[in-house]
Each structure stands twice: as structure tokens, then as C-alpha cells.
Image 1 (cartoon, one colour):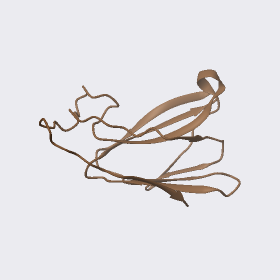
Image 2 (cartoon, one colour; image 1 turned 180 degrees about the horizontal axis):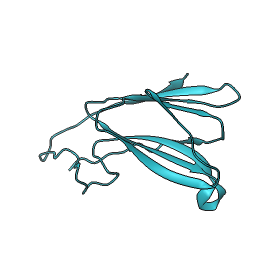
Image 3 (spheres, helix red, strand yellow; image 1 turned 180 degrees about the vertical axis):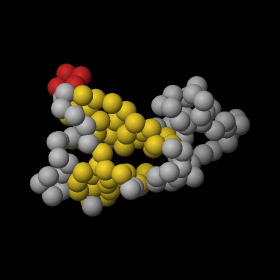
Image 4 (tube, helix red, strand yellow; image 1 turned 90 degrees about the vertical axis):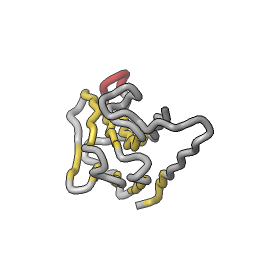
Length: 118
């Protein structure tokens, strides 16, 4: 099995833009949650903070067609963070209804993930 998921964490702040294609996301104060995009729907996301700083995250949609978005806005110990998580399998776990690809012994799978200033 080849389950892989990126989990880069970035600072979350109220009023920031989380652009995942045609949708903008935000989250209520003191709450946290994880959202799963439909398989293959997105291959990039943008984060823009109120101060004007921005980044774009892009990934290989063929190898990592699943994407979860984790937002913590003061919940769980007061942390404020957002993570864009492209993955080879769905449901945030390798034994989900959307399993990752199976690799034969010695078989190789590669993918890419890029984070750049926006």
C-alpha cells in the first residue's frame, strides 16, 4: 500500500482567505474541523493573510487526487493553524472506502508538492 499525505501547517487567522478553487473557506472562533474535497477536484490552493502575505500550494493531481483541509481556530489547546493535505488515498486513513494505490514489491511511485509565494 502506498498511503502518503502532506501535512504542512500554516498560521490561521480570522479574515484570511483560503482559496480552494471556486470556494473560499473560513472557520468560527474556538472551533476546528477537517473537510475533504471530492476526489480529483483540486490540485492547488491559496492562502492569503490579512497583512498581504500569500502562498500557493500545488500538487500532482494524478498521484495525489484526494485533499483534506484542516482548520483549527483556537480549539485544541488554543492553536490557530490551517493545513492543505493532498493524499494518495481518501478519508484521511489508509483503510478508508477510498484506498490508496497498491504497489508491488520494488514498484516505485513518485509525486510532487510545491509551495511558493503567492
